[in-house]
Length: 122
Image: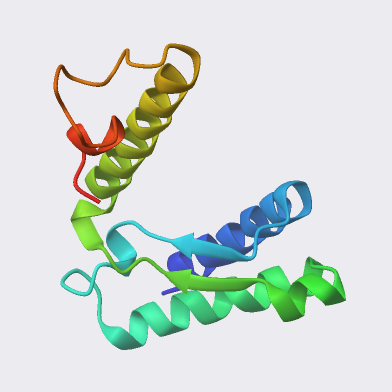
């Protein structure tokens, strides 16, 4: 357990460094150690408790109150889901920009739907 305590303290310091640079409202801890099938509930709670305690020691008082450190909930599919969402939102923005600068560019012949709705179901 000592090796994991050391790693959780190191992760708490990394979360603090990121918080000082980016000022996030939430930090999501993922990976194999947060997977419910790979680690027990007690282990995950202990790991996150040490991460939070280490981070809290170095955060500004306002950040201590506002920033949350939480485990990832999507498991092994989290990276695939995130990539799909990024692709979806980038594609949506592309079609909005294309229609803004080139009206009718995205719209199909005889279509009565809005240009973006042809490619995505909202």
